[in-house]
Length: 326
Ligand code: PBG
Image (cartoon, rainbow, N blue to C red; front, side, top):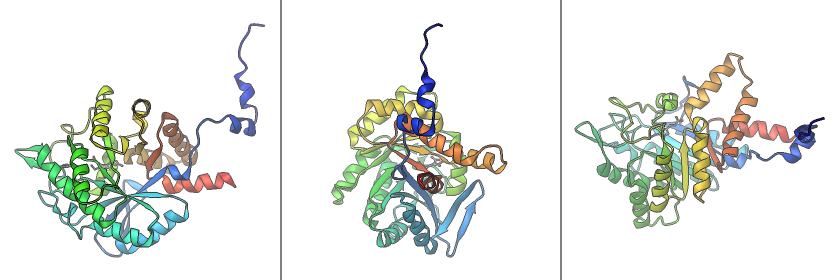
């Protein structure tokens, strides 16, 4: 008989497979996103994201308790304000919805790692992530507002600042602003590699942040580019980023691997809304097995090299992982 390798020897039983398994998911890997609204007494499902809710402050503590009870160590907060204006004032208001949420959560759960998404698009009337002049998103003017937002979030008690607006120099500007305000120990989790992706569609429903004109292609990256991702990551690190986010995740696993292999900081995948909603829709139709698919997808992100995953599936995955342990 011809010589060949017997790879199946290592797959012969569940225990055999488990002792040679290379990649594991842990509850500690997950960061759970929450959307907070200014109305009272509200827990309303986002139509395009079944299982994801608009929560008001009075529901927040109970919700976070259930997250903490599952063993999840970190959340990321998004504000959905009632009032929007040209310069996104509510993003950096002391009594802004995110600032209030951070304070409330830290008061009740001082140990939980609270990440603040730092962007303007939910807060601007035009839905862009910065200041508009002559129809163009002005880089340096947007930075000033972003710094104000980051500092106000740190003052409210955020443990990590996660700027997502893709202006050039945002990490340097925020680092300087945080340091001057006395927050030298607050880390920056930069959305360093953020593509102009159609996978954000359902989020824009959830966060009411669809651009009212044009698109985000002058600041978010072209999905066709790989080397540009490395340039973005490199400059953010040089500017002082402590974590690097790659976003979206599923169609960009190659980029995750590249970033992981090129730099030595924690790499984070953002398993975005479109990736979530596609699975939810198929599962609701009975076309796929949700649990199996979700765990396979999240495992693929870990295998590609990420240390952390921002995912709307965090609670489900935490439940499934603890079931599997029993
Ligand atoms: C804000 C922001 C976006 C997401 C996170 N922060 C949307 C965007 O750039 O339009 C997307 C998250 C998701 O799709 O789950 N800049």
